[in-house]
Length: 397
Image 1 (cartoon, helix red, strand yellow):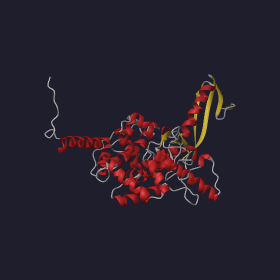
Image 2: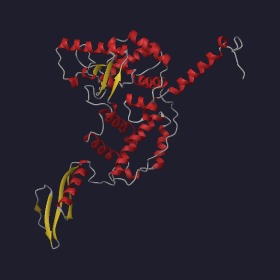
Image 3: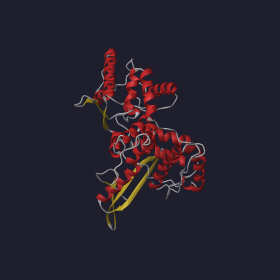
Image 4: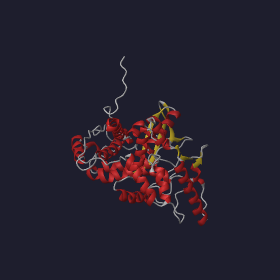
């Protein structure tokens, strides 16, 4: 059969007794081996171009060659490469998945073929994990595994994910306490102001407005303005965290980009950070473009490592005798805002959540309100308010 090139790469024509047809031939590399896929009998050029485009997409997504005997470890490599190559994961998400698979999934399931995964065995495995890990940790491990298996279904490596919708019961390990009471907050923040260097106290103060730690360290000079009332207005667009210490030009999700207004104290502290950053840059002759002009600077002109904030938090924790983390301040902000009457829908936008249910997970308002209701009742029936001492005037109609 003689094939004739067209002006489109990888598309050829050929003739048979039934007329002219189009033929598509596409070479590619899969797992370091050269492979080829073809399609013939195409009647029109537009049809051939559609087939070629579909081939290119499958090659890009690494779904062109389906291995029905692939193991969990082998498919993890494909899944990981696709997500990173297509920028589907943020740097934090990438580390989160790598760590979860390395420590909790591959050691147990790496050598097992996808098609041989047993639902009964997996249910027993989950039950075993619940004996040694908090329920939320087990749910995270399960969700990562399900994401990969669901992808394998879409790619045709397995017909169905037999492990989905596994029941995850209660754990023998109590969940980590993330609640900060109003009394604890007042004690803690006062001690923080006493013992923290002012730069770190300023960074700490920003966390009480619901900012993630990475968002605090991602603040740049261009992100800070002042509203008509003279209060600082923060435009959150960037983040610096453990895996993106030099910045990453983006937040956790697009919906995380938002505005936050500070109070008078916060305004004074953010102005302090700005003036200190300007002083340090001038001292070392540092000139930064706006997109890299972060305000969390060390005295030597280098960026402050976000982990240093946790170190400062621990120093305060040792002094007060209870534990608070930067992220717990975000939970505290959520709870106190709801108690103050802010709607959960509005609060969800302020926190940069894509779904309201995510905000509700931060909500610890029930305990706080319960205590306030009880206190109000006790105050009402206390001796000084006793109706036996000063009976009210009651009008009977």
